[in-house]
Length: 146
Ligand SMILES: Cc1cc2nc3c(=O)[nH]c(=O)nc-3n(C[C@H](O)[C@H](O)[C@H](O)COP(=O)(O)O)c2cc1C
Image 1 (cartoon, helix red, strand yellow):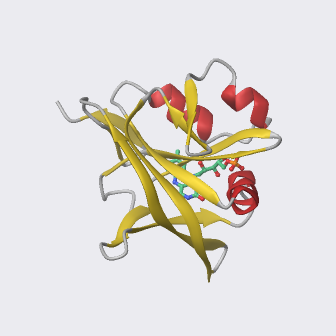
Image 2 (image 1 turned 30 degrees about the vertical axis):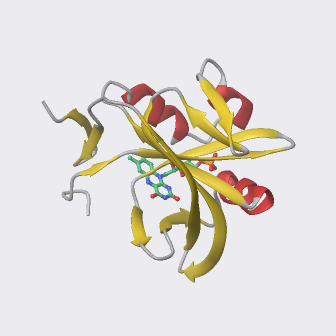
């Protein structure tokens, strides 16, 4: 699947302990009626625990030029460190990254077992977007569409 080019999202959630987030490319739209999204999330992920606690989460589609941000959110550094110097705001109780060209806020619906990951589905609550090219991930490299 590393040869399948994808965008890069950061899945975010907000709890009383603050924001949590992880880089994820195993994401997809799922249903139009109702509007559902899905993400495949590592069972060991701290963001999974946060989004289960919050009951809602967001998909932030990263803009080109944000490889460092994608690397930061893919790390196991302490969660507060991951968010240091990251621009974000809150919308519908979910963090929205300044670096996102598209943000889709969801209410958590199902958590389905899938080996060492789970498939989380969410019903779309809110969407925001702005112009900009996406960051691309392919064969372990971050790329630009241009
Ligand atoms: C490009 C890229 C895509 C990734 N996609 C996923 C994914 O779809 N699901 C997942 O659970 N982890 C994915 N990861 C790994 C997580 O970002 C990584 O395990 C992260 O450290 C988890 O952070 P957390 O424990 O703070 O939630 C990806 C990493 C990168 C660099």
